[in-house]
Length: 440
Ligand code: BGC
Ligand code: CA
Image (cartoon, rainbow, N blue to C red; front, side, top):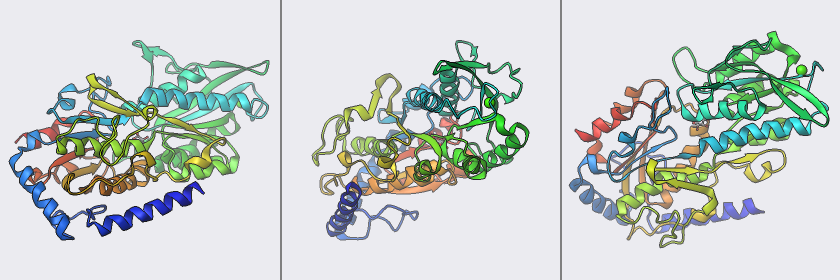
């Protein structure tokens, strides 16, 4: 019922959009052809061009998203990049809150299934962990979140060590330790039997195919010692589920709430975390829209805009010192997955079309660091493409190979053609490769 309403609304929005000649930008990849579909749009575009022409590239709005400018070894934020100019922001989600939620979700599952969880009955609950990218703070946080909840973490320099353990069948690894869980009067040991970074030979991280192979290797050496599979994301989680855990009926937990993973909960996927991509995709484009309109940055975010768009207060937070917006996460399990089956549905609270006469079409350059990334490709980008229409932004989407920054920066050869930039880096240390192009 709810879904039908949403579909109807989408159809109505599409109809009203074409009627008023709004941007037809969604999947535009050719800069020249866009913004000229109707008289209204080209008028809007020429206003944009006039404004854009006067603004130097270094002063144009920039939003970093999904990979926060930071030191990939220490996680320290790159404040130079975050303060590139007065209209620079980061949009992501609360990595620690989400990671702790993921750990708690796994722990709850164990507690609820204490009778059956220990497959070989040796008193040890064994899990394996797929790590996305050891230099990405979201990945680091998720590894820590799981180890924290299950008691398998070891402190290092004041935080839980997030290094991969390799194989740890006998519990002798120095990177993790055995935890203890008391459930229903029984005491179990919890052991991280194996974990590794899922990086392919070409260097792509968060690599689903690598995870699909790894589970085969782990299963053949660890067999029914494996009671649970955990992954830093759904792309890798689903690869392991499809290759092994579904048929073995071993609960598998991921992160992102991609549509395929949510659907798999009906078939035994243990659960996932929604990082509220509907909020993130909106914020990514909204901060640019606001900066381009020269209005308060909170417009359409914490304060309703002229169309009535406003985010629910409990869906995000803004940390001024970090120039960062963070969406809040929600656990998706067998109890509530029905509400999350379409990961690409925009949030109703912020789905009202902006008026093109007061919010004229502007051109945005936006890259996705890895065109093959399951989350960014199947969840984030489809949402961006819906919001760009609603916000009258003509977005050129660039897809990277996930490995080489220059593959993307090479396609930012002419920043003068755009009014604003949305950047998803291959490596979080590399912000200067982009800002230097804007500063020339
Ligand atoms: C997502 C991963 C994704 C990564 C890419 C994370 O926030 O959870 O699925 O691969 O971003 O940067
Ligand atoms: Ca066991």
